[in-house]
Length: 409
Image (cartoon, rainbow, N blue to C red):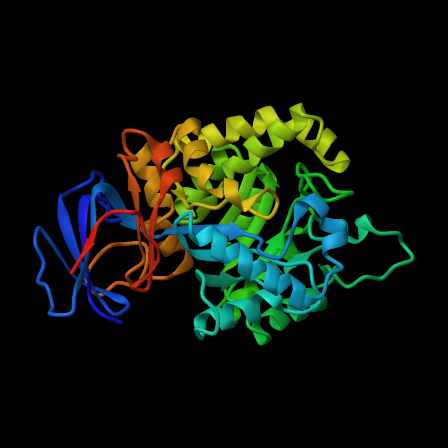
Protein backbone atom coordinates (compact mmCIF):
# COMPACT_ATOMS: atom_id res chain seq x y z
CA UNK A 1 0.00 0.00 0.00
CA UNK A 2 1.65 3.23 -1.13
CA UNK A 3 1.63 6.60 0.60
CA UNK A 4 -1.25 9.05 0.05
CA UNK A 5 -1.36 12.79 0.54
CA UNK A 6 -4.81 14.27 1.20
CA UNK A 7 -5.17 17.98 0.42
CA UNK A 8 -7.99 19.07 2.75
CA UNK A 9 -9.96 22.29 2.48
CA UNK A 10 -11.27 22.20 6.06
CA UNK A 11 -10.47 19.73 8.81
CA UNK A 12 -12.44 18.47 11.80
CA UNK A 13 -9.99 16.43 13.85
CA UNK A 14 -12.58 14.83 16.13
CA UNK A 15 -11.83 16.87 19.26
CA UNK A 16 -11.49 20.58 18.41
CA UNK A 17 -14.42 22.96 18.70
CA UNK A 18 -13.82 24.46 15.29
CA UNK A 19 -12.65 23.52 11.83
CA UNK A 20 -9.11 24.25 10.67
CA UNK A 21 -7.53 24.34 7.24
CA UNK A 22 -6.40 24.22 4.62
CA UNK A 23 -4.25 21.33 5.76
CA UNK A 24 -2.61 18.20 4.37
CA UNK A 25 -2.56 14.64 5.71
CA UNK A 26 0.09 12.06 4.85
CA UNK A 27 -1.20 8.49 5.09
CA UNK A 28 1.41 5.74 5.09
CA UNK A 29 0.02 2.22 5.19
CA UNK A 30 -2.93 2.08 7.54
CA UNK A 31 -1.82 5.01 9.70
CA UNK A 32 -1.68 8.79 9.63
CA UNK A 33 2.00 9.70 9.34
CA UNK A 34 1.86 13.49 9.30
CA UNK A 35 -0.62 16.39 9.46
CA UNK A 36 0.28 19.98 8.69
CA UNK A 37 -0.05 22.92 6.32
CA UNK A 38 2.29 21.06 3.98
CA UNK A 39 3.46 17.48 4.47
CA UNK A 40 6.37 15.63 2.91
CA UNK A 41 5.75 13.68 -0.25
CA UNK A 42 7.41 10.27 -0.51
CA UNK A 43 8.52 9.33 -4.02
CA UNK A 44 5.58 6.95 -4.54
CA UNK A 45 2.94 9.19 -2.94
CA UNK A 46 -0.37 9.84 -4.67
CA UNK A 47 -2.19 13.10 -3.95
CA UNK A 48 -5.97 13.25 -3.57
CA UNK A 49 -7.51 16.69 -3.87
CA UNK A 50 -10.14 17.28 -1.17
CA UNK A 51 -9.52 21.01 -1.09
CA UNK A 52 -13.21 21.81 -1.58
CA UNK A 53 -14.34 19.49 1.22
CA UNK A 54 -14.46 19.16 4.98
CA UNK A 55 -12.43 16.18 6.15
CA UNK A 56 -13.33 14.29 9.32
CA UNK A 57 -12.48 11.08 11.15
CA UNK A 58 -14.51 8.14 9.88
CA UNK A 59 -17.94 8.02 11.49
CA UNK A 60 -18.76 5.45 14.18
CA UNK A 61 -22.28 4.10 14.64
CA UNK A 62 -22.44 2.47 18.06
CA UNK A 63 -25.87 0.85 17.70
CA UNK A 64 -26.81 -1.18 14.64
CA UNK A 65 -28.35 -4.57 13.90
CA UNK A 66 -26.77 -5.94 10.74
CA UNK A 67 -28.65 -9.25 10.91
CA UNK A 68 -32.10 -8.02 11.98
CA UNK A 69 -34.82 -6.61 9.75
CA UNK A 70 -37.69 -4.99 11.62
CA UNK A 71 -39.80 -4.84 8.46
CA UNK A 72 -40.19 -8.64 8.63
CA UNK A 73 -38.55 -9.61 11.91
CA UNK A 74 -40.59 -12.70 12.75
CA UNK A 75 -39.89 -14.30 9.39
CA UNK A 76 -36.33 -13.01 9.02
CA UNK A 77 -35.23 -14.52 12.32
CA UNK A 78 -35.93 -17.98 10.86
CA UNK A 79 -33.24 -17.62 8.19
CA UNK A 80 -29.98 -19.52 8.57
CA UNK A 81 -27.05 -18.01 10.41
CA UNK A 82 -25.05 -17.96 7.17
CA UNK A 83 -27.80 -16.09 5.33
CA UNK A 84 -27.90 -13.47 8.07
CA UNK A 85 -24.12 -13.03 8.07
CA UNK A 86 -23.94 -12.70 4.28
CA UNK A 87 -26.74 -10.16 4.17
CA UNK A 88 -25.14 -8.32 7.09
CA UNK A 89 -21.87 -8.10 5.18
CA UNK A 90 -23.60 -6.55 2.20
CA UNK A 91 -25.38 -4.05 4.44
CA UNK A 92 -22.14 -3.16 6.25
CA UNK A 93 -20.33 -2.51 2.96
CA UNK A 94 -23.12 -0.25 1.73
CA UNK A 95 -23.27 1.60 5.03
CA UNK A 96 -19.55 2.31 4.90
CA UNK A 97 -20.16 4.37 1.75
CA UNK A 98 -22.05 6.84 3.93
CA UNK A 99 -18.89 7.35 6.00
CA UNK A 100 -19.26 4.72 8.72
CA UNK A 101 -15.91 3.00 9.13
CA UNK A 102 -16.68 1.40 12.53
CA UNK A 103 -19.91 -0.19 13.77
CA UNK A 104 -21.04 -1.72 17.05
CA UNK A 105 -23.63 -4.42 16.39
CA UNK A 106 -26.02 -4.69 19.31
CA UNK A 107 -27.42 -8.17 18.96
CA UNK A 108 -28.90 -10.74 16.62
CA UNK A 109 -31.88 -13.06 16.94
CA UNK A 110 -30.13 -16.31 16.14
CA UNK A 111 -29.00 -19.37 18.12
CA UNK A 112 -25.53 -19.12 16.58
CA UNK A 113 -23.01 -16.24 16.49
CA UNK A 114 -23.24 -14.81 12.93
CA UNK A 115 -22.10 -11.31 13.88
CA UNK A 116 -19.02 -12.68 15.65
CA UNK A 117 -18.16 -14.67 12.52
CA UNK A 118 -18.67 -11.54 10.41
CA UNK A 119 -16.47 -9.47 12.73
CA UNK A 120 -13.71 -12.06 12.57
CA UNK A 121 -13.84 -12.24 8.76
CA UNK A 122 -13.62 -8.46 8.51
CA UNK A 123 -10.74 -8.26 11.01
CA UNK A 124 -8.82 -11.00 9.19
CA UNK A 125 -9.22 -9.25 5.84
CA UNK A 126 -11.15 -12.16 4.36
CA UNK A 127 -13.85 -9.68 3.32
CA UNK A 128 -13.89 -5.89 3.06
CA UNK A 129 -16.06 -3.62 5.14
CA UNK A 130 -16.13 -1.50 8.28
CA UNK A 131 -14.52 -2.38 11.58
CA UNK A 132 -17.04 -4.30 13.67
CA UNK A 133 -17.51 -4.57 17.45
CA UNK A 134 -20.12 -7.04 18.62
CA UNK A 135 -22.64 -7.85 21.33
CA UNK A 136 -23.76 -11.16 19.86
CA UNK A 137 -27.12 -11.62 21.59
CA UNK A 138 -29.64 -9.64 23.63
CA UNK A 139 -29.96 -11.06 27.15
CA UNK A 140 -33.46 -10.56 28.50
CA UNK A 141 -35.87 -11.66 31.16
CA UNK A 142 -38.94 -13.55 30.07
CA UNK A 143 -41.50 -11.02 28.82
CA UNK A 144 -38.69 -8.51 28.33
CA UNK A 145 -37.78 -6.67 25.14
CA UNK A 146 -35.41 -9.42 24.05
CA UNK A 147 -38.02 -12.16 24.43
CA UNK A 148 -39.22 -12.69 20.86
CA UNK A 149 -41.33 -15.76 21.56
CA UNK A 150 -44.46 -13.63 21.33
CA UNK A 151 -44.00 -13.45 17.56
CA UNK A 152 -44.78 -17.16 17.30
CA UNK A 153 -47.46 -19.57 18.50
CA UNK A 154 -46.77 -20.97 22.01
CA UNK A 155 -46.37 -24.51 20.67
CA UNK A 156 -43.16 -23.56 18.83
CA UNK A 157 -39.92 -23.48 20.81
CA UNK A 158 -37.78 -21.44 18.42
CA UNK A 159 -34.33 -20.61 19.92
CA UNK A 160 -34.00 -16.99 18.83
CA UNK A 161 -34.02 -15.37 22.29
CA UNK A 162 -31.45 -15.38 25.13
CA UNK A 163 -33.78 -15.54 28.12
CA UNK A 164 -32.94 -15.83 31.81
CA UNK A 165 -35.13 -15.78 34.93
CA UNK A 166 -32.73 -16.77 37.69
CA UNK A 167 -29.24 -15.84 38.80
CA UNK A 168 -27.59 -19.00 37.52
CA UNK A 169 -29.01 -18.65 34.02
CA UNK A 170 -28.09 -14.98 33.88
CA UNK A 171 -24.49 -15.81 34.76
CA UNK A 172 -24.45 -18.69 32.27
CA UNK A 173 -25.68 -16.50 29.39
CA UNK A 174 -23.10 -13.80 30.12
CA UNK A 175 -20.35 -16.42 30.28
CA UNK A 176 -21.57 -17.97 27.02
CA UNK A 177 -21.26 -14.60 25.29
CA UNK A 178 -17.70 -14.30 26.56
CA UNK A 179 -16.81 -17.87 25.59
CA UNK A 180 -17.93 -17.50 21.99
CA UNK A 181 -16.45 -14.12 21.27
CA UNK A 182 -18.74 -11.21 22.15
CA UNK A 183 -16.97 -7.92 22.82
CA UNK A 184 -19.89 -6.45 24.79
CA UNK A 185 -22.84 -7.68 26.81
CA UNK A 186 -26.19 -6.32 25.62
CA UNK A 187 -29.23 -6.57 27.84
CA UNK A 188 -32.70 -5.06 28.10
CA UNK A 189 -34.07 -3.86 31.41
CA UNK A 190 -37.34 -2.37 30.15
CA UNK A 191 -39.74 -3.24 27.39
CA UNK A 192 -39.47 -1.82 23.89
CA UNK A 193 -41.71 -0.55 21.12
CA UNK A 194 -41.38 -3.16 18.37
CA UNK A 195 -41.42 -6.25 20.59
CA UNK A 196 -44.72 -7.90 21.52
CA UNK A 197 -46.02 -8.21 25.06
CA UNK A 198 -43.83 -5.69 26.92
CA UNK A 199 -43.88 -2.02 27.84
CA UNK A 200 -40.98 0.50 27.64
CA UNK A 201 -42.39 2.23 30.73
CA UNK A 202 -41.91 -0.91 32.86
CA UNK A 203 -38.67 -2.32 34.26
CA UNK A 204 -38.24 -6.02 33.44
CA UNK A 205 -35.19 -7.01 35.53
CA UNK A 206 -35.30 -6.96 39.31
CA UNK A 207 -32.44 -4.93 40.81
CA UNK A 208 -30.57 -8.03 41.98
CA UNK A 209 -30.85 -9.58 38.49
CA UNK A 210 -29.43 -6.49 36.80
CA UNK A 211 -26.66 -6.36 39.40
CA UNK A 212 -25.77 -10.02 38.84
CA UNK A 213 -25.63 -9.58 35.07
CA UNK A 214 -23.39 -6.50 35.28
CA UNK A 215 -21.14 -8.03 37.94
CA UNK A 216 -20.62 -11.18 35.88
CA UNK A 217 -19.73 -9.11 32.82
CA UNK A 218 -17.39 -6.92 34.86
CA UNK A 219 -15.58 -9.97 36.24
CA UNK A 220 -15.00 -11.13 32.65
CA UNK A 221 -13.84 -7.67 31.54
CA UNK A 222 -16.87 -7.02 29.32
CA UNK A 223 -18.68 -3.67 29.19
CA UNK A 224 -22.47 -3.67 29.39
CA UNK A 225 -24.92 -1.83 27.12
CA UNK A 226 -28.50 -1.61 28.34
CA UNK A 227 -31.57 -1.07 26.19
CA UNK A 228 -33.72 1.04 28.50
CA UNK A 229 -36.81 3.22 28.41
CA UNK A 230 -38.37 4.14 31.75
CA UNK A 231 -36.44 6.58 33.94
CA UNK A 232 -36.38 3.91 36.67
CA UNK A 233 -34.78 1.54 34.17
CA UNK A 234 -32.11 4.11 33.34
CA UNK A 235 -31.36 4.55 37.04
CA UNK A 236 -31.22 0.79 37.62
CA UNK A 237 -28.69 0.38 34.79
CA UNK A 238 -26.56 3.23 36.10
CA UNK A 239 -26.51 1.82 39.64
CA UNK A 240 -25.47 -1.59 38.27
CA UNK A 241 -22.50 -0.08 36.43
CA UNK A 242 -23.58 -0.09 32.77
CA UNK A 243 -21.17 1.47 30.29
CA UNK A 244 -23.90 2.78 27.98
CA UNK A 245 -27.63 3.44 28.04
CA UNK A 246 -29.23 2.65 24.69
CA UNK A 247 -32.22 4.81 23.69
CA UNK A 248 -33.07 6.03 27.24
CA UNK A 249 -36.46 6.88 25.76
CA UNK A 250 -38.07 8.20 28.93
CA UNK A 251 -35.05 9.39 30.91
CA UNK A 252 -35.54 12.25 33.37
CA UNK A 253 -33.32 14.95 34.85
CA UNK A 254 -32.42 12.89 37.93
CA UNK A 255 -31.23 9.97 35.80
CA UNK A 256 -29.23 12.32 33.60
CA UNK A 257 -27.49 13.72 36.68
CA UNK A 258 -26.68 10.17 37.79
CA UNK A 259 -25.31 9.33 34.33
CA UNK A 260 -23.11 12.41 34.35
CA UNK A 261 -21.70 11.61 37.76
CA UNK A 262 -21.04 7.99 36.80
CA UNK A 263 -19.42 8.89 33.45
CA UNK A 264 -21.91 6.74 31.55
CA UNK A 265 -22.53 7.21 27.83
CA UNK A 266 -25.98 7.74 26.33
CA UNK A 267 -26.83 6.49 22.85
CA UNK A 268 -30.20 8.20 22.26
CA UNK A 269 -31.02 6.92 18.72
CA UNK A 270 -33.00 10.06 17.88
CA UNK A 271 -33.57 9.34 14.18
CA UNK A 272 -35.38 6.15 15.17
CA UNK A 273 -38.03 8.33 16.82
CA UNK A 274 -38.44 10.33 13.62
CA UNK A 275 -38.86 7.08 11.68
CA UNK A 276 -41.48 5.87 14.15
CA UNK A 277 -43.36 9.19 14.05
CA UNK A 278 -43.52 9.00 10.27
CA UNK A 279 -44.78 5.41 10.44
CA UNK A 280 -47.35 6.31 13.11
CA UNK A 281 -48.78 9.12 10.98
CA UNK A 282 -48.71 6.91 7.86
CA UNK A 283 -50.46 4.07 9.71
CA UNK A 284 -47.57 1.70 8.93
CA UNK A 285 -46.23 1.25 12.47
CA UNK A 286 -46.43 -2.43 13.54
CA UNK A 287 -49.59 -3.09 15.52
CA UNK A 288 -47.71 -4.05 18.70
CA UNK A 289 -45.95 -0.66 18.66
CA UNK A 290 -48.91 1.64 17.97
CA UNK A 291 -50.34 1.93 21.46
CA UNK A 292 -46.94 2.21 23.12
CA UNK A 293 -45.42 4.77 20.78
CA UNK A 294 -48.71 6.67 20.48
CA UNK A 295 -48.69 7.07 24.25
CA UNK A 296 -45.00 7.95 24.64
CA UNK A 297 -43.83 9.88 21.56
CA UNK A 298 -44.22 13.36 23.09
CA UNK A 299 -42.34 12.28 26.22
CA UNK A 300 -39.59 10.68 24.12
CA UNK A 301 -39.03 13.95 22.26
CA UNK A 302 -38.99 15.86 25.56
CA UNK A 303 -36.42 13.42 26.96
CA UNK A 304 -34.27 13.86 23.86
CA UNK A 305 -34.30 17.62 24.39
CA UNK A 306 -33.26 17.02 28.00
CA UNK A 307 -30.38 14.85 26.82
CA UNK A 308 -29.28 17.42 24.23
CA UNK A 309 -29.34 20.18 26.84
CA UNK A 310 -27.28 18.19 29.34
CA UNK A 311 -23.53 17.68 29.52
CA UNK A 312 -23.63 13.87 29.63
CA UNK A 313 -21.50 11.83 27.25
CA UNK A 314 -23.53 11.31 24.06
CA UNK A 315 -22.43 8.78 21.44
CA UNK A 316 -23.82 8.34 17.93
CA UNK A 317 -26.06 5.33 17.47
CA UNK A 318 -29.01 4.73 15.22
CA UNK A 319 -30.66 1.31 15.76
CA UNK A 320 -30.43 0.75 11.99
CA UNK A 321 -31.94 -2.61 11.18
CA UNK A 322 -35.05 -1.40 12.95
CA UNK A 323 -35.26 1.06 10.04
CA UNK A 324 -33.31 1.30 6.76
CA UNK A 325 -29.55 1.75 7.00
CA UNK A 326 -29.76 4.38 4.27
CA UNK A 327 -31.38 6.66 6.87
CA UNK A 328 -28.70 6.15 9.53
CA UNK A 329 -26.71 9.19 8.40
CA UNK A 330 -29.73 11.35 9.32
CA UNK A 331 -28.97 10.88 13.03
CA UNK A 332 -26.74 13.96 12.81
CA UNK A 333 -29.71 16.06 11.72
CA UNK A 334 -32.00 14.55 14.35
CA UNK A 335 -29.48 15.36 17.08
CA UNK A 336 -29.14 18.98 15.98
CA UNK A 337 -32.92 19.31 15.70
CA UNK A 338 -33.16 18.13 19.33
CA UNK A 339 -30.74 20.85 20.42
CA UNK A 340 -27.17 19.55 20.06
CA UNK A 341 -24.67 21.99 18.59
CA UNK A 342 -23.33 20.73 15.24
CA UNK A 343 -19.77 20.43 16.58
CA UNK A 344 -20.99 18.27 19.46
CA UNK A 345 -23.01 16.12 17.06
CA UNK A 346 -19.84 15.51 15.03
CA UNK A 347 -17.97 14.51 18.18
CA UNK A 348 -20.67 11.98 19.08
CA UNK A 349 -19.77 10.00 15.94
CA UNK A 350 -16.01 10.37 16.23
CA UNK A 351 -13.98 10.92 19.41
CA UNK A 352 -16.81 10.32 21.90
CA UNK A 353 -17.96 7.13 20.16
CA UNK A 354 -14.36 5.88 20.14
CA UNK A 355 -14.07 6.60 23.87
CA UNK A 356 -17.28 4.67 24.55
CA UNK A 357 -15.94 1.68 22.62
CA UNK A 358 -12.48 1.89 24.18
CA UNK A 359 -10.96 2.18 20.70
CA UNK A 360 -8.17 4.69 21.11
CA UNK A 361 -6.75 4.32 17.58
CA UNK A 362 -9.86 5.70 15.86
CA UNK A 363 -12.21 8.68 16.14
CA UNK A 364 -9.47 11.32 15.98
CA UNK A 365 -7.26 12.54 13.15
CA UNK A 366 -3.78 12.50 14.66
CA UNK A 367 -0.37 11.05 13.89
CA UNK A 368 -0.13 7.27 14.43
CA UNK A 369 -3.92 6.82 14.56
CA UNK A 370 -5.73 4.59 12.08
CA UNK A 371 -6.31 6.37 8.76
CA UNK A 372 -10.12 6.24 8.97
CA UNK A 373 -11.02 9.42 7.09
CA UNK A 374 -14.13 10.77 5.37
CA UNK A 375 -14.86 13.97 3.47
CA UNK A 376 -17.96 15.88 2.45
CA UNK A 377 -18.67 19.01 0.39
CA UNK A 378 -19.68 22.01 2.50
CA UNK A 379 -19.32 23.04 6.13
CA UNK A 380 -21.14 20.78 8.65
CA UNK A 381 -20.95 23.45 11.34
CA UNK A 382 -22.96 25.81 9.15
CA UNK A 383 -25.27 23.09 7.82
CA UNK A 384 -25.22 19.70 9.53
CA UNK A 385 -27.11 18.15 6.60
CA UNK A 386 -23.92 18.10 4.52
CA UNK A 387 -22.94 15.02 6.55
CA UNK A 388 -25.43 13.17 4.33
CA UNK A 389 -23.25 13.97 1.29
CA UNK A 390 -20.04 12.13 2.20
CA UNK A 391 -18.23 11.25 -1.04
CA UNK A 392 -14.79 10.20 0.21
CA UNK A 393 -14.28 7.21 2.51
CA UNK A 394 -10.97 5.75 3.67
CA UNK A 395 -10.64 2.96 6.22
CA UNK A 396 -7.21 1.96 7.52
CA UNK A 397 -5.54 3.75 4.62
CA UNK A 398 -7.62 2.10 1.88
CA UNK A 399 -9.87 4.33 -0.22
CA UNK A 400 -13.34 2.81 -0.62
CA UNK A 401 -15.07 5.84 -2.08
CA UNK A 402 -13.64 8.86 -3.83
CA UNK A 403 -15.17 11.96 -5.43
CA UNK A 404 -14.42 13.02 -8.96
CA UNK A 405 -11.84 15.40 -7.52
CA UNK A 406 -8.61 15.52 -9.50
CA UNK A 407 -5.95 13.04 -8.40
CA UNK A 408 -2.28 13.64 -9.18
CA UNK A 409 0.99 11.94 -8.50
